[in-house]
Image (cartoon, rainbow, N blue to C red):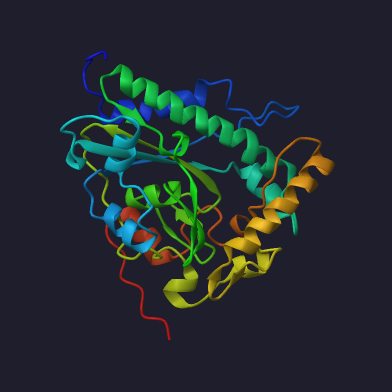
Length: 304
C-alpha cells in the first residue's frame, strides 16, 4: 500500500466535492441531463465514540461498530477503534426535485424516482471513489453499505433494521437528528440521501450540536406539526411513529407505478420528505439559531 502523506479533513471534503462536481455519473439520466446532486454536507465521527455501542444496545447487537465493519472486511492486527474515523455525508435533494415531489400524493414524481435509482448509483460510486483515494494515501477503508456481508435483519422492536445505517452514521457525525417518520433532519432538511466510509485515519470528530436524538423535529420538541402523517400515502406514519412494514409494501407497489408511468426500472416514495416544514431546513427555530451560533439548543420539554 502506498504510504503517502496522511489525508486531512479539508482534503477529504475536497475529494467528495470534486467527485460530485466532475463525475459523469452525477446525472438523473433524463433528457435534460440534469445532475443528481449539486451540494454536500460532510461530517466526521470518531471510531471510538460511545455512540456506536449505544446503537448496538438501542438498535440491536447486529449493528456494527466502525471497528467491526473494518475488521470483518479488512482484517488487520493491532488496529483499535481509537485509530478509526467515520466520514459521513449528506446529499441534499435539489430544489426542483423537492418541488416535483411536493406535488405528488401517492407515488413519487419522476424526478424523485430517478434520484432514488441514478442518484443512489452516484452515491455508491462516491463511496467507492473515496475508499480508493483513502487507500492510495495509505488509509485502509471500507464503505459499510457496499461490503458483501451488509444485511437487513428482522427486528422485534423495529420490524427490520440493517447492520449499518447511513442515517445513524450521519447522526453520530453531527449532521442531524431523527424525525417522527424516522427520517434524518439535517441543516439542509430531511429531503436527502446519505453515505459513509470507515477509515484508519485520525481526524478530529465534529461535535454533535444537539442534546437529543430528536432535537430538530417539531413533533417531539413542542408537540406540533405531524405533517408527515398526512403526507404518507400508506398511512405508515402515526403519532406512535413509523410502521416500516407498511412503508415497505408501498415501496414495492411504487416499483410497478414507476415502470409503467415513467418507463424505467425504479421505485421510491419520499412524500414524507417533501411538503413538510423539515423538507429543506431545521424547522425548530431555537435549534436552527443555536446551530448558526455554534451552541447547543435548549433541551426539549417533556411531552405531556
